Length: 290
Image 1 (tube, helix red, strand yellow):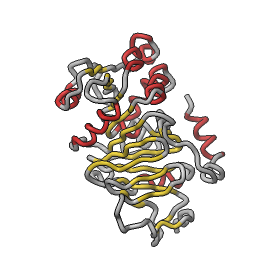
Image 2 (cartoon, helix red, strand yellow):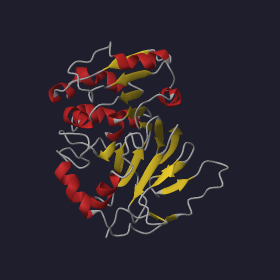
Image 3 (cartoon, helix red, strand yellow):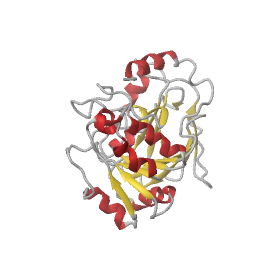
């Protein structure tokens, strides 16, 4: 696994990763990353639009869930069908040999969109990390498709797997620390305000200061294209950047729907016509805790 290599490189790059802008998001395609609940139809509609419309082939991978068996009758597909999606294929396995097989990845090779529902993100890592399935997921983006997910399906899209411990979901840095890296040098948390988690990413970013932390509340998404994302939905997204401190020594700040963010330059932009700049964000590292 790449986990030990990730840890070593993380420490090596602390001093250099922030010196220059870098590619963080996918070079092609798009990501829709949701903080949970998924009660805002506008988020699902945006995913369908990015996939190419209701007629586009979409794959759902519910492996983060606790069940052993998911098939084409998976209940989570009903919401997509109600929005007019015509071609849905559900794929699932916990067997890494199956995840490497031609038959299993065949629907993914034809997909214009792939969706990961919620559950526990380490289950996705166990089943698919470093398999042909993961390779084909990256190819979905390479050909201009879209990958999305909610809750666990959000966190797996980052390079660092927050809350990846098999014992419980309160351990931020656990026995699984590697995601699919659709976003590089990123740690993603979810259910931010709904579960009072807005301070939980701070120790993680203090340990791995090269990472950018992104926390998403429920019914709220970021839509990523290239290094930029736009906030979509009903609540807020929090940014945790070790090199930027708020006035009063704050370690994170919020973006609202319509705001955007450049993950390469780490600059936030308020939505158009807003008179609220991010004047309170100072380009200096977080102060040491006393």
